[in-house]
Image 1 (cartoon, rainbow, N blue to C red):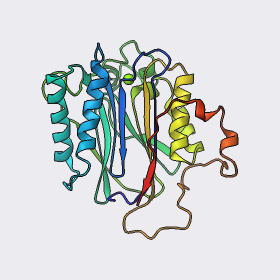
Image 2 (cartoon, protein in one colour):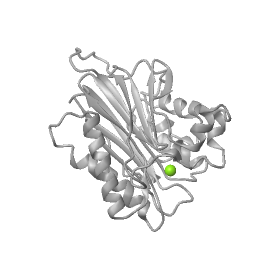
Image 3 (cartoon, rainbow, N blue to C red):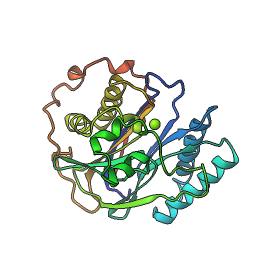
Image 4 (cartoon, rainbow, N blue to C red):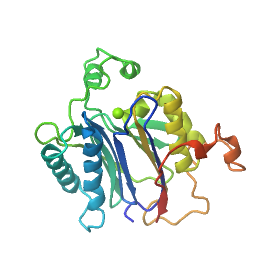
Length: 277
Ligand code: MG
């Protein structure tokens, strides 16, 4: 386990409007990926599934999880999509290199890091609204409501080879990482997302709560999240209490279930959760 001791949770939901869930996700000890597919006639869900299968199929290999490894997976997925279903897909992911995370993205699915009470976006979107923000024509708050908020400028599988952007960050004890599709970030403000992440200790409950909040806020798109908690970094002695203490956690540990706003069994979430050391 390159990332040390981690816990994770994940959740996805079709939302209230879309007929098909074209998002897909993967949560394995050292590889976490979210992909958001696009294209008619079910091309989108096949495209996203193709991206996820590339990363899932390579999980058992002993190859170093570096930029080359990620780039190869993306290229192969792009080729498969163009030769098969058509359509396109975003990707955002985290792989554990020795001592650090390598985050990567194509499109507008995002990675965030929560550490010591703050939340920061790791990735930068490839989208029309991000370009408007970069040029000063739009503020970040306007990204969620702009009429072109769904238009992305880079995708896997549409035209040619799309290269991911890469971001390196240290693996820090107590950190919580979030991968999500735009169905989350277009429905909830970053302050709302941070608030949910800070109030649920368990990563699976946090993932469920984020998806539920996005669906309640409108659910106009598929919504998918993966939440990863770093409990102990490699080589460091395990502390007695390995909960993410740096987060401003509400005192829910007495009875987490009773504080939930609705019956969680009602959520059709084929969740993937786990822990590893
Ligand atoms: Mg989407």
